[in-house]
Amino acid sequence: MALSRGLRCCQRVLAWVPVVIITLVVLWSYYAYVCELCLVTLTNPVEQVAYLIVFHVIFVLFVWTYWKSVFTLPLQPDKKFHMSYADKERYENEERPEVQRQILVEIARKLPVYTRTGNGAIRFCDRCQLIKPDRCHHCSVCAMCVLKMDHHCPWVNNCVGFSNYKFFLLFLMYSLLYCMYIAATVFKYVIKYWTDELTNGRSKFHVLFLLFVAVMFFLSLMFLFGYHCWLISRNRSTLEAFSAPVFQNGPDKNGFNLGFVKNLQQVFGEEKKLWLLPIVSSKGDGHSFPMRTLCEAQNPLLANEEQWGDDGLDEENQGYHEGSSLAIEMET
Image (cartoon, rainbow, N blue to C red; front, side):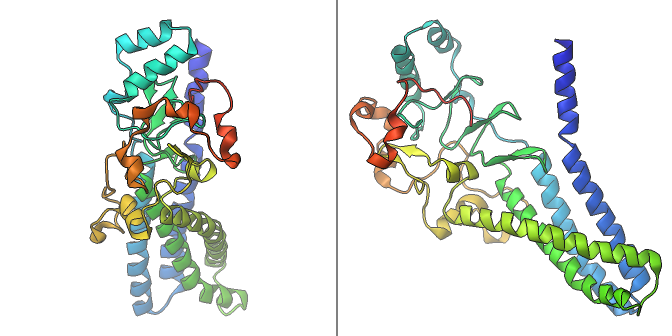
């Protein structure tokens, strides 16, 4: 037991290593840009002031969004999605899978749940002992169920989900802007150092390496940000892009797609003045989401449990119905 606690403690400490690395790189970039470029290399006072003002505006937004991405705790399902003591005891004491399935159906009838597992079973987390809300998944790293989970990101040492997805997107955007601004303003002086027009040896190293790091991070972040912009435009999470959510008529990758504008509002809210700030403005509470077809919203899956035995999917999706009748989803 002591060894297990020690390993978990080490794991928690090591999980912060990527965050520490990012923090050190950002601190060095601040020193290199402000001190070595603006205060040492630049000689024009107007240029110095202009560079520093714009840099600090972007820097503050970048650090602010990163902080919010790291330290905003993932939201877990409300207590109403957890099994009561009596239901838990009844479920655990029952050995017949079909009766266990019926117990879950009875519990879930009272909840706003519209998605199921691939073969029609209730999405139940055996570890957290709860009925999973739509778009909720269990994170094995955080050891909890996370509302509208997108993915677990080691670079923020946090689960990206309903509570901080907006912050994570803004972090990617301001990271790109930060790298692009540095690269654009530093490039001219890199050329001067390269052609020996400027000769300060210490500043030369910092300025040259600053351009290299900025371009490297910009290229890598550009693809990641582009991918998440595509996901937002279709109102999908990373997990849903790999495995489509299952509705009454089977898997539907566009089940939550409401159209481009409404998809944006789901993440950023309706107040456009808050879109670019890391302030909570996302619509909803993370437990239920509007769906593409009104008939699905008006007819909960749980009202017609028997239909799952008869309503087959098309040939492409028949594999979802194979397996045991229980098929409780343990974790993502």
